[in-house]
Image (cartoon, rainbow, N blue to C red; front, side):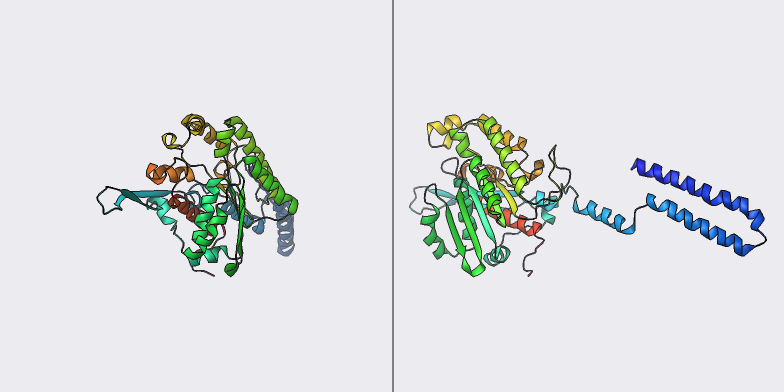
Length: 370
């Protein structure tokens, strides 16, 4: 900017010399012939205009520069970065009339009503809205049991209770993939069993090789790695490899920042990318001694740091928007889990609604619009 201003100043000075010195010298001699005087002045003025043109942007360049400022704003306070701001109200509910004191809990969630979050008008979508939003889409959800629970919550918003009962057996076949086509809206959903980050990287390479990409891609892994590998540095390397594979095969504009935190918004054109975070692990509730020993608080923090350092998430300069299962499970609390790892369906329902609202924002759609 300083160089540009310096160039303009030099250009203006040169223009003054070109314009006023010859006019002053010629003024006396041409004063008796005004037509000749003004013709000369006009000629010199046009010459000056040509001289200065390179120092000023064209109107179209100016408009483009303003548009660029709007499009590539860092949007730190935008709604897409507030979509995980969810609050919980967990209340006890007596479920037995026999007097044995059995108590269950109502788990009610909603978006915060404070400040900027309220202005975003996030909404829980009904079945019709979800069908409209995902009409004709190919959705892929890849990961471990957390991802499978997310698939169940998503399908519960699309299918009726009877059909959900029919598919649960196939959906929950242990360590297996699952696919379904919802013919009435032309939506295909694939669940890919991918408990390790390396499995996710292989999936990305498969998309690249086949040159076919889903419209919505949700992925996440870490629990199996923490239990069976138990090495945060190795997890970090795996995440960085995954990030490289995602960046190499997907169309981004502008380019993702590769040297530090994001300085402009990342425009993900297709597919829409999400990272399914790991839940809060309640160590005392984990159901095996091995899990309690290996999946301790210190190791969980190390794995969180590895995710941060990998810059896989959009908030750190990466391509994936976080579905913050950790925050959701933490705020729902121990009353929302029976094994300290897998949470009630309400937690994954909230994650799905976060995903759907993010899709509305990214696709510039509004509820009820065609």
